[in-house]
Image (cartoon, rainbow, N blue to C red):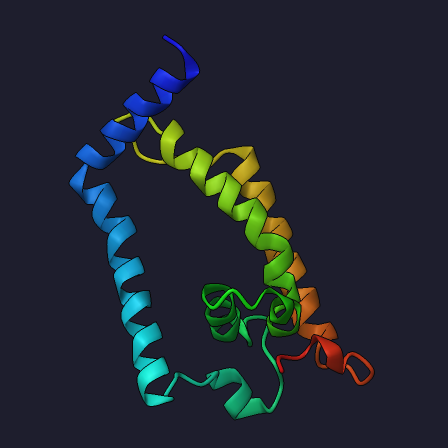
Length: 143
């Protein structure tokens, strides 16, 4: 069996599992609905952390990031959330590989790669969250 045939088989098996497909489709549909709601009304969810403390959390700018990405405004992405811009490609590649490597009927289990990627991501986001609130690093704050 060639790599392409194996990939097609995994893809077919992935979409046969309705639970797995729902876990993929429902968040995407909710995100699309939120996107159109914000675009039509101009009303969005504000960052509770920023509203309460006046500081920017590591996730501030994520909504703008996604909206700019969907609008093909790639020059705006670093100004929305630089940490996510750096980490997103790693997570996208990892999750894509993991989605098709999980054997049918088996639960996704943690590997050392997942652990390392999660720890590195958390550390980067925490450091980013602290640094973006230090005077002189205003360029890391969402626009």
